[in-house]
Length: 300
Ligand SMILES: [Mg+2]
Image (tube, rainbow, N blue to C red; front, side, top):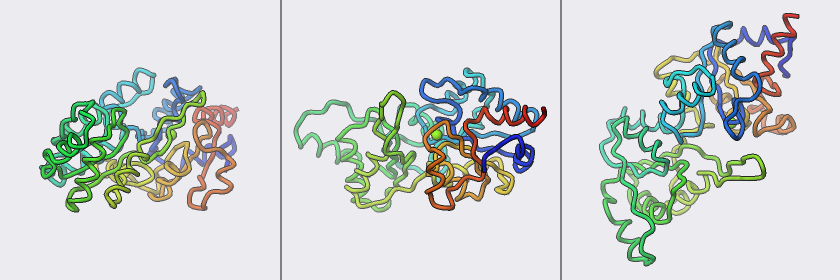
């Protein structure tokens, strides 16, 4: 259903908590918020008393640094209100009292997120290595029995030796846990640039090891469970806002939330006509800032 001035009040009465995706919803490439987004979030928070959590598959920054980025853009946000896969993984490992080492494919700040939760992150191998197979074998064997978890996510400095090492550890040790953050295989940017998504490298790990990783990013509900653990969510009173049918509307459907698709990012209106029924959003709006336009015309 298209969100309009006719149904805006009914829409706003249908939820208390918002789980909101970031890329493609709040901003596009260049991290400049879309028109009216900052004001819209303030109106939802202050005038309608909505609690907002930002739920992204992007774990590149730490929680503090991501909240700082929000605040710099004018979006009021506490670190507790931003959630990404590295946090859910770190919390899980802390909860189960994980004591071994984690081999991590992620940025330095991703590793910091895990370390802040007490996870012992395996140091990166120096690169480049000597171009001989024996050098690879030596690295694969080093500390292999100390690794209790492999975590696969967006790693800009990903390298051949660590992929090969992780694949071997996963294949040889069925007790070694295997977590996956973001699953995207492509990260489309504007101006025709597409970055290789972390899902491509997870695929290599899965093919090489014969294992399937536990997905902690959207469309799994692990991040929703993480929020619920600390802030209790009522599924009947929660709205998920996102720009992708698969990841965002998929999470909303799996968690039993209301859903709002914004058309300012990845998925278009046409896709909602052909996707599976469970992914069809409850509401559609061209962009998040248009909620304000609906409110203004409703008042008029
Ligand atoms: Mg998005």
